[in-house]
Amino acid sequence: MTAIIEVSHLVKMFGDHAAVNDVSLSVEKGEVFGLLGPNGAGKSTTIKMLTTLLSPSSGRASVNGFDIVQQTTAVRHSLGYVPQALSADGNLTGFENLLIFAKLYDVPRAIRTQRINEVLSYVGLLDVGKQLVRTYSGGMIRRLEVAQSLLHQPSVLFLDEPTVGLDPIARQAIWDHLMDLRADSNMTIFVTTHSMEEADSLCTRIGIMHRGQIAVIGTPAELKANIGIENATLDDVFVHYAGDALESGGSYREASRARRTARRLG
Ligand SMILES: Nc1ncnc2c1ncn2[C@@H]1O[C@H](COP(=O)(O)OP(=O)(O)OP(=O)(O)O)[C@@H](O)[C@H]1O
Ligand SMILES: [Mg+2]
Image (tube, rainbow, N blue to C red; front, side, top):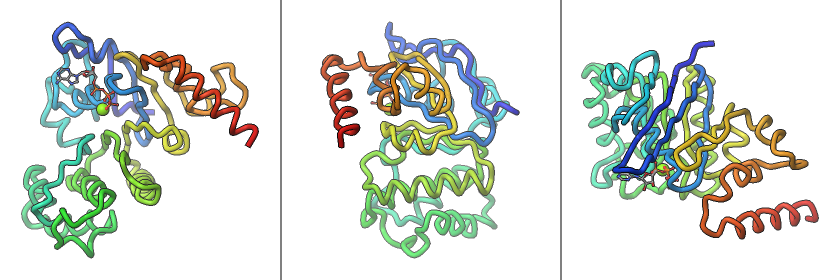
């Protein structure tokens, strides 16, 4: 087994606030690693450091064997990144958006059009490639952004909440594409999501992040088996490790318990 993402004691300070506080983890090639945690836990900050967009305050990490501080160019060539906020330009067509990124990623001019059409077709947008992105639905924009992140054939894909705000069919479409990628090219996927269902069914391993730290890492089955609740769901796991994150922590726990009871009764 080869670790393609290696993180060791990573810290990011904003002023005197440790947004990421001593995070260590490793992800093997071909895994779908899910980073879960409440709002403000430090998930996006972790991804931004691993993608070289933010420099760490201390600690080390490597992606595809390259150090995120010393070898930023090689790291950037190794990865694709889909940011949390929608980033495609609505005043350009899908094709034009991809062309900008093809140039940015140094895709050779001779194969740019071919590569763009390949990724458009991969995410099912070839038919609408010539339309302005502002005519796309949220799910189509997200698929375009996934396409964008694949132009330079990266070995690791970082996705920050790829399915937030999408309807169930659009979510499924995104995940189908990601699972195809993994099957076709053994792509390693590092993803954050607030959907416990998605994480449970699609991630090979999950890390739960809370207040800048990793509370626990394991397969979905391990996590559910280890919290002392019969027939635990990943919701239960989340509440177990991060349930005190909300000011109304107590009521969140109660709400979750009530839902669980309702489910058993239902
Ligand atoms: N550029 C910044 N300057 C100052 N503080 C920041 C900055 N970026 C993030 N933070 C803070 O760092 C903490 C972690 O934020 P981060 O965006 O990593 O959380 P997250 O886990 O991605 O949350 P969410 O689920 O809401 O996306 C938060 O307290 C946030 O306010
Ligand atoms: Mg975030």
